Length: 159
Image (cartoon, rainbow, N blue to C red; front, side, top):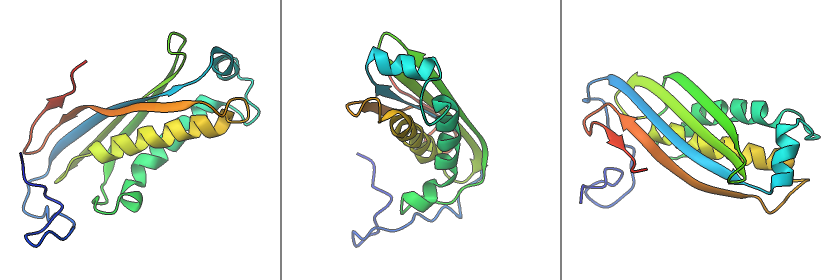
């Protein structure tokens, strides 16, 4: 098992010193789902949500979430992101919305947390936008799908 880098030799939590690491291109892709009834999905797909265009608002929220990750996750480094792309798609077979985030940076530490935070923020925004229609929606299966760059190299989640 690898060492947990967010703890020092005394076991105290600390921000990892990345100053000696070389800057490399980094990418992370994450996904998550908002499960809902077919009726609620129809409200979103048909643009009948009282608060507006659910998917557009959730897309912007996901981008903001990625950019604010270091403000929310205590030991994350503030990063200069070079790309944040959020894709939201209706999945009638779920039924619900699939959210995918792609985050890129060139730096000394990875962007996995930014991609995961983007997913959580976008999914929560979908929930917020249509909670008046359905309070029983479930946000689920938020996970890292891909990361590449840096010392640990490439990771792809099993499908």
